[in-house]
Image (cartoon, rainbow, N blue to C red; front, side, top):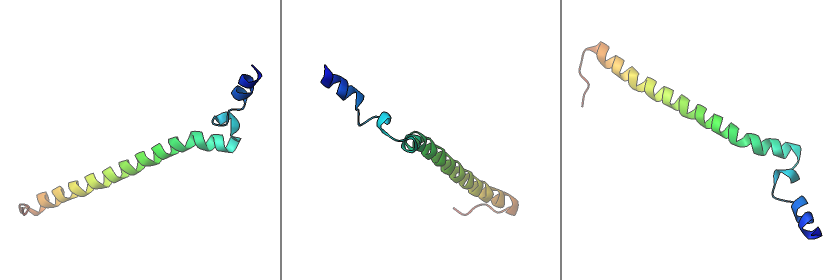
Length: 68
């Protein structure tokens, strides 16, 4: 019974054995990566849409059809 208690209380693979800074990093890292990824996708989409809409407006104001 003593061996089971020792194994249960000395878990090396859990957050219990890590320091406070490491815990904060391990818990915050996925959130930060998700936020940064979302921002990059949003900014990229914004500029792509802006680029394509700009071409449509140029063609509409020039009065000439777009070359195929």
